[in-house]
Length: 364
Image 1 (cartoon, rainbow, N blue to C red):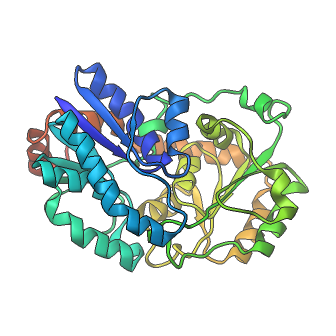
Image 2 (cartoon, rainbow, N blue to C red; image 1 turned 180 degrees about the vertical axis):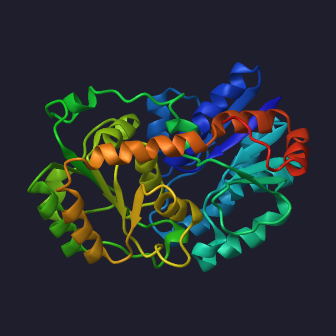
């Protein structure tokens, strides 16, 4: 079987890296098409993957919209040369190519239509053309007869204990003593089209947050775009492939982003997440991680989030409490990498089997 995989973000690289390796180990040919967005290509290079870039970064949201048709045709052109039997990815690029080539398309997503008007329109456009759309079981929106719910999170495709082992040498890279307390902060740029109108920590909030945390721990900041000059010196400087080690050993993770919040929670690190996604329309995975597992604190108001940060950082047993919660999560969730390899390799029979026996446990 020949499998085409479209990669648009660093998170998607992480999701598919073990799936691609798993398919190749089973004798299938795999091609990776990668969008030049954020740190996507840099991450692929660090991981040693061969890939074909299919887009150039745009400066503005309007520029991204203008580039979209060219990117879609470039993707399809590369797939036509490869002649895949099946195409998979997270959205429009995979779907467009599959339509043009009349090949099956399997999409994975954990971004729900409920979060924004843009997202709801996005789903209405592409859903009629998807053969199967796989979502976490925590996914709250109903996507119809082609939706397959799996009891897992996309982040377990690379942070499941079978694939991820933390390396303590991260302390050396961070120039810290072993087991020295530190905090990681992540500020998003919210430059994606589906992030339009989303807000979080203001400039003063960011400065105050760093000031509070730096009084009791070493502070590192991972950020997109720019941050106030007053806190630029806290910038995290490590290879992109080591971010999960930083998350694993951090005493606390504070963020306004999405994927990294789930990553930290799955790794057993306390998470405070604050942005205007939080609320009645928040996504099911964040609600489940907070209400069922107690691994994330979702706080819409940045000022309230900062007050909670001040409270948690004083707890000497914080890390142990979260590691215990993590073990309960791992007991309940399945290995989504093994599931995806099985589903792709055996499609369409795998889809029929899931529809006939939706409650059967797989790959726990």
